[in-house]
Figure 1 (cartoon, rainbow, N blue to C red):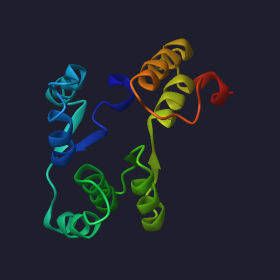
Figure 2 (tube, rainbow, N blue to C red):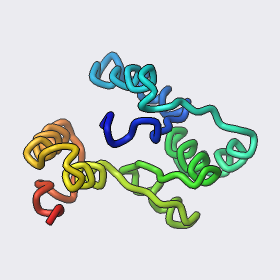
Figure 3 (cartoon, helix red, strand yellow):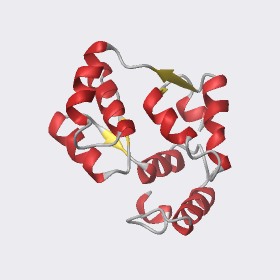
Length: 142
């Protein structure tokens, strides 16, 4: 993660708020603070232009997804989401997106992590309730 995203990943304040509300139940989410403090992720506050796009999206999306799309639109970023509604909005607005599986796949292809590790991560996520269209990263990296 550090190698792949250092100084390229942006997290909106709305996403941070959503993640921090889960710190008690999912302590591993606290790693986001380390990523921000070490400047691997930068935290972003919406501009007035972004807030205008956000206001139009908040009626059909969560705050985190809406803020990410608004920021991506302004800066030509890639949205990272597994939310199908957010992906549909990205398609409508011609904003590129990826998700958990895409990140795991790219990380394996770029040798940032070994496929065995990616499969273990995916297995743990599925066990915790994550819906995945694939059960094994090896099946999509060749």
